[in-house]
Image (cartoon, rainbow, N blue to C red; front, top):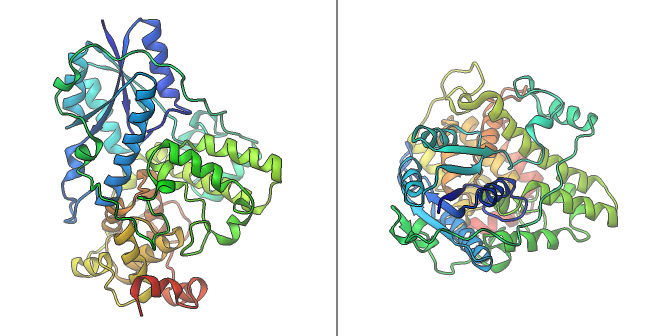
Length: 440
C-alpha cells in the first residue's frame, strides 16, 4: 500500500491545518496510508558562527513539550507522530522510500534554510506540495503583489485596512485520520521514540518563579492544548481591553497576550486567534486594546511578507541598507550575552532571557538597541543569540525586528536607538524589574 507523507514544520497543531487537510484529501482520494513526520536537524545541535549553541535548552524543552502534546492528540485519532533526527535532505527521502511515498505535503516557510530543505526533497525526486498557512492574511489576497509591497509598515497596514481585508475562517481540527502504514516504522533512518531525546531537552521541572512566561508550568507548557486554553483565558475581561496600556510593561503575566511562544511553534494559528478575538469584540465591544492586538498580528504578517519580497537579502550583513558591514567586538558581545555590561536595565533583561528563555517585547528592543548602537556589535550576532535563547523564536519576526532596530530593514529611520536612561525612567522607575534580576 502506498503512503502520503505529511511533514510537520512550524505548524505543530491540528486545528486550522490546511496543509494537513490537503494531505488527508490526497490520501483518501488515492486510498493511501498517511505518515506524519517531524524532523530535528543536526544543525540545531551545533554551534553558530558566533560560538554558542544554535538551539538552547529553553526552546528545546518548549518544542519537546509541543511535540508530546501533538503526539497525544494524534494517538487519540489512531495515528502516530514519527520523530526523525537527521538532515531533511537525507531522512525524509529515505523515509518516503521505506513507506512507498512519492508525495510530501508541508507548510510553506519563506526563509532561506527552509526553502533549501524543500528544494532538496524535490532534487531527491519527491513531489512536494507546500502551502502558506502561518500568517493572518494570505499573500495572494493582499491589495498589492509581494514585489510591490509598501516598504514601511504604516503604509502596509493602511492599505490592508482600507481594502477591508479580513483573514480566512480557521478550520476545525480533523476528527478522523487515515491509518499509518503497517511498516516497521521504528526501522526508519533517524527514528526516535521520545521528543525529549530527539531534541536533547532537559526534562526536569525547573520552573522559574520569576519568569514572565514560566513554560514548565502547565498553563504555559508547549502544545496546542495549552495554547487554546491560554487563548480562552486571556480573552476575558479586562485583559484585551488593557493591552495597549500594558503592552510595554517589563513584567507581569497579563500585561501582554503572551501568544508568541505558541504562534512560533504553530501550536495556535493567527487566524484562530483573530476569530476568537472577533468573538470577544462581539460580546464585549471593541476598543484600543483589541485593535492593538490586531495591529501586532499585522506586524507579524509584515515580517513574513518581507521574506517573500526580499528573501536572502534579509540575512545579509548590510540587510536592505547601504550601510557598511557592521563591526563586531566579541568581548563586548559576551558581556552583553551574560548580562555584564554595567548598564543595569540591559543586564537585568539579559539575565532574565538567559534564565527563563523569555523577556518582554519592550526589553528586547532595549537590549537589541544597546548591542547595536551602544556596543557597536554585529546585529546578526544578537539575532543568533535570540534564536538560541527565546522559547518564542520565530525566524521571520526575529530577523525583521533586528533589522528594524539596526536600521538595516525597511524602516525610514536609520536605526532605532533606545536610550537606556530614558527607558529605565519610563518602564522601571521604581527599580522593581532590576531588583528581581540583579538583586539588591
